[in-house]
Structures are given as structure tokens and as C-alpha cells.
Image (cartoon, rainbow, N blue to C red):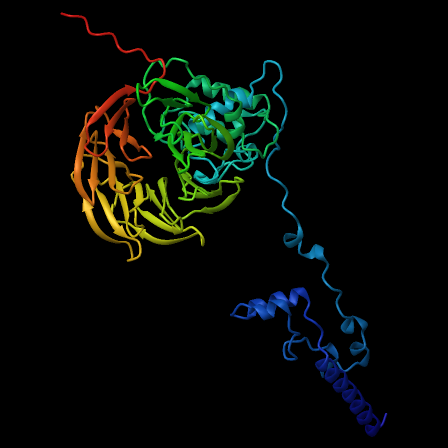
Length: 552
């Protein structure tokens, strides 16, 4: 071969190689998954969001040069290999199993079935133990360790610890729940309470060994409410002991005194303190009784402490009797307060779940649920025009809310202790509140909750305050066993005679009579204008007076 022919062939090969290389540089291959990973390692900065959404093709400098571009291997056959020009197949979904594969459910499933003969029943035997010892800290509002026990599905699943191994049917020794209720549990449950008796632990273990089945209707229902409705309530016809008077009211139709009882309301005549009627059933303790101004409706706030709470709306008949109209609320802890708006169209209630609820009285529909307090709410009160609502809370504050907008307007932190009671002044311009600091404080909600005066002289917490219907008198009751009556914020009377905390009182619709109730079950009547004492009785149906002490 001549030199000219050799040079011509060499030049031809070089031109061919340059054309192929240039063409490859113009159209680089998309980076393979493996190449993309290497590129990410080389780059010190993480990819921006835009890079993640649409991967940029590899720059020419980063792309692999084909073998034919190397001058030391000028063979055309190498550049023409199909393997060098074939585009890689798109990655299959199976290449990223972690992103597409659904996580399998953990742990065993629970069973819903009736308890068999001789088997332990959850609803009859296990549920009462949990209500007494567990529910106060493991409910929807307060879920310690992220563990909710008020429906069976969540109870079975477990919380922060024990998911999947909380309850293992047939295997109590492998169930975390069983481990924690034993004396050596870490942490032992119930937490910071007396340990469960050995016989109760043995009963729970037997239930788990038999399959840990739920004998209610559905694993998602609130079994605490089901239990509450199905549990028999035995109200004695004759009380063996007195019960604390936690609520009092005057019935606008007939003028009877209405007092809290054991799972019931008791109605007493003013004239002779005779028992007129008993309205039942309610929760164990009735914390407040409210009437509309026209006496057409009555509302009650009640509860079994740490277990159950209820708000009920009652229709008041012409003779003063009350018949249940609607059960507005059932919750897992006590409801402490109810109040009607001045026009009687709206009802507000609040309690241990830290929420304020508003209902339309006519149809019972919920108008709003306001959650702004950090702890129990003990009292609520409407402004005279019904546009604002004040609250008193264990979080050491009193707040004012816009009823229409359902939002907080101002917070008063002046008590620095639990606030038990609150009321607007009759003109609606100021708010009066009382609390655990043994003070009554007056403040302006329209001036950044600025305190305007303090009423002192109390020997204990102030549990309740209220203005008389005519707006003339402000009445308070306290743990110092007395009541105080103010006129224009000046002390008018101090009423003494009770032998225990005065927890509640009521003022008659005509503003003439005051009834007070104490923790020992005693009710006393007073003339509001001059503070003179009237009749006294124990509001406990059928309670026999103690026999007189024998003479020495």
C-alpha cells in the first residue's frame, strides 16, 4: 500500500470518528440509574427541588465518550457496536420497592364477639376496671403516651409503646399491657396511683388468654358511653347520708328550690322545705342548674368525676316539673357549667375537656365548639346583650369570647390561681371573677383586661359569684363557710351559719330570697335585702335526723 493511500484511509477513519463523536456529544445518552447515583456523590450540594422534579441530561463533559473516539483504537467496528448506541430501558417500578410497597399491618387483629359461657366479659368485667383506673389519662382529649382507650380498636392497638404487642390474644405473658399493670412494670400502670389488686390483674390476664375479645357492637364505638348507658343506677329512696350541695336553683314556675342530689335533682318547697319531686336519672354529681328567664327550659351540667360528663336540656311544664327534651352532650369527664343567653335561644356549657360548646336551644344543634383554654373550665356567663361569653378556668385565666365570631377577645391572668367563677356586671361594661387566690377581681374587657378593683376579705377560695336578677346585689360564696353580699361593690352583709364550704347558692327571680348550699348537704335560706336567716334543711330525701346524744 502506498503512503498516499495509507494517509487517505487514516484521514477517512479520523473524520468518521469525529463525526460519530460530535453526533454523540449533541445527543448524549440519559444517565443510567447507577450513573445518576455517582453524580450525586460527586456533587457536594443536594439537588434543588427543580432538579428532583426533572432530571437534567448529563453534560457533554460528564457523558462517557465512546470507545471509537480514542485515537489509539481507530477501528470503525468498535464505534459501530450496537451496545454503545443502544439507549437503556426505563427503570421498572420494582427498582424502587421502598417507595411503592405498602407497609403490612402490625400485630394481631382483635375480635368482636359475645363472651362465651364461663368466659370473661370485657363490657361487664374488664371495662369497669379501666374506667376507674385508666380512662382519666387515656382518652381522646388527654392521651398520655399517645394511648387512647375509649374505643376498643385503639385500646387493643396500644400507644407510644406496645403497638402490635400491646395485647396479644391468648398470650398474656407476651402482652405489654399485662406487663405494665404488674407491680414491677416500668412504668407501672396506673401511673402514680394505687396498683391494681391482684384479683383484677388475674381477671385481665384471663380475658387476654381467652382471646381479648370485645363483646360490644363495634370496635370503633366509644365503649365508655355504651357502658355508662347500660350500667344500672341505683338511687336510694331514702339517703343513708347527706350529699354535697354542688348546685342550686329557683324554679321560676312555682318557686321551688332545686338542689343537686345523687344521680338526681330534688325539688323542695320554700314554705316548709317539703320534698316536692325528684327528677332522674343524671350523672352522679350535678354541678350546675340553669333556667331560662321565662322558666320554659332547664339545663343541667353533671358528671362522674374522671369517667363521664353530660349536658341535658329539659322542658319545664306549667306545674314546674321537668321532662327530658334532649341529651346534648356525653363526654369522658365532668361538665361543670351551663348558662343560657339572655334571650334563652342559646345554651353554653363547659367542663373538664377544656372546650366551650354552644347549642341552639330550639333544635339542639351545635353552633360552635371553642377550644382556647389549657385546663378545666369551671364557669361560663353571657353578657347582658348575649354577644359575648366569659369563662373561668383552672389554667388560672378568665377569657372573653365573641359569640358570633367564635373567637377569643381578651384574657385576664390577674388571679394567678384557679379561676372558679365569672360574671358580667349588669351594664355589661366590666367583668367580675373569683378564684383560688381568695379574691374577687373586677376588670375591663374593653381595656386590655385592665383590673379596676379588688374585693378581699375572704378566708378561702371564692367558688361562685352572681348578680341578683334586678342587678342590685352581687353575691359570693366561699370556702370560708360564708357568703358576702355587695351593693355597688361595697360590702353589705356577711352571711354566716354554714359549717362547711359554701359551694353554691341561688337567688329567687324576684331578687328577695337567697338559698345557699354547703358541702355537708345543708341548705339555708336568707332574706337578700337585710341578710336575715330563714329556714334550714338537709337536702337529702328520707335522711333520718341523728339521734340525740344520751345524757351523761
